[in-house]
Length: 269
Length: 184
Image (cartoon, rainbow over all chains, first blue to last red; front, side):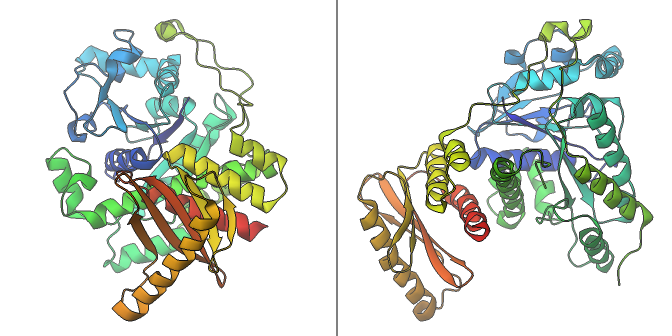
């Protein structure tokens, strides 16, 4: 069964969906078969994923028992990458989806989907609500994207408290895969100062070295429904996600090595 | 000047708490709920999965050479490479997997190509010329990546099909080699 990583943040608009798509694409280039799962009712992931064909069935249909895992998985034009979209909800479906969060169906669905893939990357809705909690209950790791902006940073404790709560409850094996700075504007003095503070204050290993720059190529990729790496002139933007993918993979391999020497240590750190 | 933010400090404290209370394997999977019954019982997480050959070597052998070879074998299995060698700048192989050609020759060839990389930097003004790829028949290639550990020059050479994009795996393995050698 593959490693399940949920990308979640208490604040919206920090680049979760962009991170899921581009990180997944890059991991698929060298780390095995990757499945992206859109658990956000806004359903932004499917529209940007270079799909071979649209699939009206998605995670919603799986957790409501209207479909099965095989039918909801859609292949993309990239051989290493597949996708489970959110589905096409009616109004009543969204309330039922919320109820599934507490029933265990969402976390079970994630685990079921992970069979046959090396990585599952789930796109959580913004916030620390029941859907995000359910996703974390079925995940191995939590990746938190954060902008170097004060409002985004101020929401970090909320997400970490949720992680702590899930670990204390239904998923003691859940780990922090890392905090990644996204949409970083390198010429902004304020963002530079905030990003430096994040680096200085968070414990070593919590913050990923790779920061994702603000780059309009991400918007262009979104307009063309592609991972940014597939744009012909977006090397700089795509390189950041390749480096992020490599950093995560490298950490995973290091923790496997370290685990052999000192069982019981927290995997990531 | 550093930004003073109480929420950031709280985040650091929470991560510190997580560090001091490492995650553990769940004792039991939650029971399947009727609404999730169509999915069957939640898959049971393996607490002790069967070790792969390189994991086995890592756990069994205290020797650095064995660990290096285990890393290289893992690299070849994951990436579909035909062989890999780590050599020093004089062409001495430090570790090797089975390769289609004699690993000693690959190591020696690494040293020769390594000198070419040095010359590329100095003569052609190519900054940080650290890798070279050579197609040695119609289907396969040898890729050489130069890296340094402290002041020691080392080479990672892999043999793989020409259509393979090998860069990611090579970079990852290089980092692992650095971790392994620096911890020894």
